[in-house]
Image (tube, helix red, strand yellow):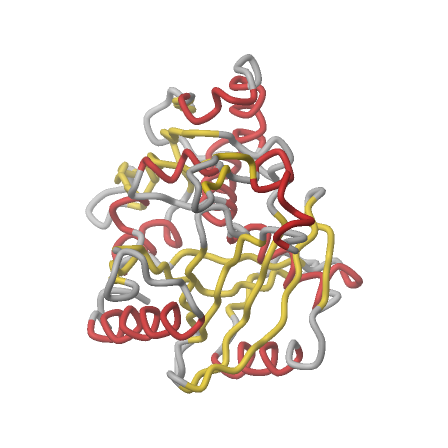
Length: 317
C-alpha cells in the first residue's frame, strides 16, 4: 500500500513577525516536553490529543496526534453473516467508543526537519501547528507557529528572495477550511457552501488573484505573498486528488514571484509551482493489502522515507 510521507520545518514567529526555524535540538526538547502525559486542545472546534511515544522496532521516539472522527462520519461494517450496518449502531456490542484519525511526526535526526504521515482524515499540518503553539504557550507573548513544507532549493530561494507575488493560482478540492487564517481559503469555503454536505467530495474551486500590473511592487504584492505562505503552511498540499474525498486538499498552487533582475534595473517575474516543488517520498506500508497499520509498520515506512529524503540532501535547504 503506497502512501506519501511529507517533510516539514517548524517555524516560530515572534511578536515582531520575525521567523525562527526550529533546530534539531528544539524538536528534541519539544518531543521530551510531550513525554509525560497526553494533552488535548481544542483547535478550530475539534479536539486534538497528542503525546510523544516510544517504538522499539524501529527504535525511535515520535509524536502521535489524534482527533475524533465525527459520529455522522463513522463507516459501515459487515459481520460474518453478511449483515451491513453503520458501526456507530454497534458501539455497545463492540465496545468501540470512538474512531481516531491519526498523524505521526518523526524528527529527522540531526536536521531541522520532521517527517509527517497521516491517516486519510488525520490532523492537518495547520492543526498540528496550532496544537504545538498551545502546548508551548506561544500565544502568551504574541508568538505563533507554522509547519512549512520542505521545498526544493530553487523554489524556496525564489519565494524567500522575491520582492512580492504578482499573481496566485489555487485549486481547492473537497472541503476548504472556513476557519482558515487565509482570506482566500475562507472565500473558497464560502463558494462550495452552495453544495450539500454529501457533495463536497465532488466540488473544486479554482481561483486566480492578480495585481494586473507587470512587476510593480507594493502592499498588494506583499499581501499576496503572505497568502501564498499561509495556504502553503495550512493545507495538505496534495499530489493525489483522491485525498479530497477525506476532507480537503490544495491540488494546484502556483505563484508568479517578482524578482530583482541581475542584469537591469527592471524586475522580472518567475513562477513557482509548489505542488511540483514540495518534497515527499512514496513508501509501501506493510507487505500485504490487509496488514494492520500498527505503529511498527507506520514507523518502519517513515524511516524508509527518511532514508530516501537524506539521499536527496542538496535538493532542499
